[in-house]
Image (cartoon, rainbow, N blue to C red):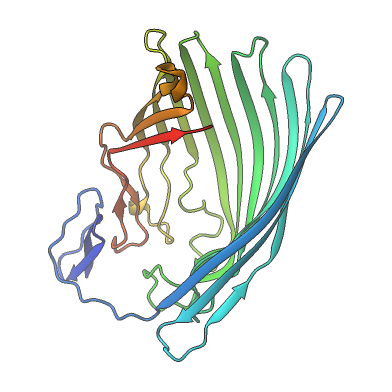
Length: 344
């Protein structure tokens, strides 16, 4: 038996035929496929309230930033496979926070260190139709910022480590290993990386921006033996972008921009099937903003913003979740968005 699929409409069809490799960039489809029986069905309603406080303290050349946040999410879960079942309520209360310290030098250098924790409620249920607990994370970051004299640019470099707990992993006793719907919550993942960002004003009309991120990820704990010690899913090792901004003197209030964003290959399949690894890609975007305050003083605060993403409508696959290819989908094509905003 072989599986063939259409990556956009997520329809799988199987038939006895001579087996061959799957190419999700050039799929073959038109065969028969028996629909699987529904085994789980749940209804969830979520509400969340939160309170946070933050303060910045300065002493001589030292700057400290401290914050606390309290979250109370409420998730009501109903098992629709059992109409007479009771609603299960999940109330996860958590306090998260961050603390950072920066030292300001006269030459524009500003080294810093920070530590933060986070809390993320998760929707969904496990194989018993029980709701998941919240996912937690902690991050430590070391870095330095530099602003040269004259204020025409800024650069930053940071090293970080992020550790996540209560991560969802595939259910180890699932009799159908290609079904990506059942998960247990025993995973632990870590990301160590570098981020570099800079911007500079070449002339009063032209400015440039560039950013790069390197992420070395590792699955530390998982029910999935294929994942242990491997990279995290959906996280490219390399990501980068570059932008050029142009504000012409000839047309006051107008700002034009163009840029590219790129990422290396990454994995989305929990079995780490090599043929389903998503290739690297580079996309081009452009944008335009106009401040109507340049026409009349009465229009100050009114701005029109138009963005065009994936300018050349490049076709690419964004994810493939299992070997059958039934959950492979294309990424977003050419998209144009407009936003009119008024501030006072």
